[in-house]
Amino acid sequence: NIIEVKKYGEPFRSQFHFTPEANWMNDPNGMVYYEGEYHLFYQYHPEGNTWGPMHWGHAISTDLIHWDHQPIAIFPDEHGTIFSGSAVADINNTSGLGTKENPPLVAIYTYHDAEAEKSGEVDFQTQGIAFSIDKGRTWEKYAENPVLKNPGIKDFRDPKVDWYEDKDGKGKWIMSLAVKDKISFYSSPDLLDWSYESDFQPSWGAYGGVWECPDLFKLKNESGEEKWVLLVSINPGGPNGGSATQYFVGDFDGKSFHAEEQEVKWIDYGADNYAGVTWSNVPKEDGRRLFIGWMSNWDYANIVPTEVWRSAMTLPRSLELFQSNQKHYLASRPIQETQGLRVQKKESNEDTIDLVSDLLEIELNIVSEDFDLEFSNEFGEKVTLKKQGNSLYFDRSESGLTDFNESFKKMHTAPDLGLELKNLQVFVDKSSIEFFFNEGELVLTEIIFPENPYTQLKTKGFGEVKKIHVLKSIW
Ligand code: FRU
Image (cartoon, rainbow, N blue to C red; front, top):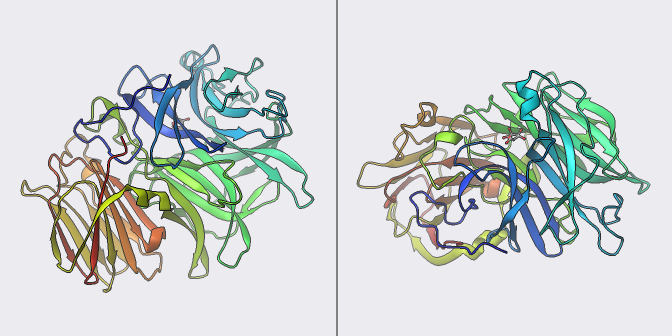
């Protein structure tokens, strides 16, 4: 029952980023690796190309690049529509929803009861679960939903669950939950009964909007020391307006999270990487913390100029810690699987390069304090990225269609985070451009809607040899 994948030829249709076959998509949900397959679920409105009653759409990949669309996994029911959440492989069958021999995949999501909301109640968001015993192909709701009731708070959503083990190897499930403008942690032995543990709400965090879509995981830093990272998406209040994802680096002791460095940090300085979280159950031998985000922004997500489908995901990234000025930062490294998209390579020694495709990966070495690059075509459409002093400037005001929203045209800025910028990798798809400095230590993810392909790249401040890869479509 896999829908036949067709070539997506509509204007602006992403060719190497995930998009739903038709209709509206927002947050990535339920990402779990199981038996050789990466599952990607997503906030989906199957009846229209704008946000509406939410379902979980579904796709499966074996390399995080090529995706097979699956039937809708989770539908609304009497408790509400299905908001964001996560999925885990319950390997030891702690929930009893599968068997020891065939453990279940368990999805933990938010029920949004729109009727209750309309009638003025405040406890309209609760957490429910569904499970699959056929490798994620079909999903059954737990009969006693919801598993976590609402204590009387309007915003109570986006459960991200993972298995936690203490030093003695004693384990439990930990849920990170967005509760208005804080993160609450809950724990459970079996995914069914949840107990409150603690709240995280530092006085110095970014609070320009509501907190959403948390994710808690540990990573080793460059000296091999373990740190805990907490991702928190916020909307609005991002560094370049609208939606964005902040993160905290610190410690988690099974009960509470403490941030170690009092600085607001952003996972991406572009405007279009929101609600991103990481895959659970990725094998230890792989060792990566794999991430994907929704490549849009609530400021204009509903009115971007696409019709058949709306929104794409970012390229998948591997999250790693690095240090700069004695502080920890998160790198979003392009995953090596992306290299499988390369079909043709050209090297150029010129500063101005004619482009032969609109699906590109470009590798540049930075040799000057200040630099700039501009993609353009003969119709006057262009985007520019420039470094001056300690800041980066991205301008999409003349990138193509921009009139659908005033704030879309705004210049975006990013600090250089005290980094010595050494190289830049740029991915250009039909309606997005992603900039990765120093293999992802500083990232800008941006959507654009050029009506014609950019045919020329002008560069200044880069090393002589510029690598241009033509990429292929995944569909
Ligand atoms: C984030 C978000 C989540 C919510 C979902 C609804 O973009 O607002 O908090 O669960 O989208 O679609």
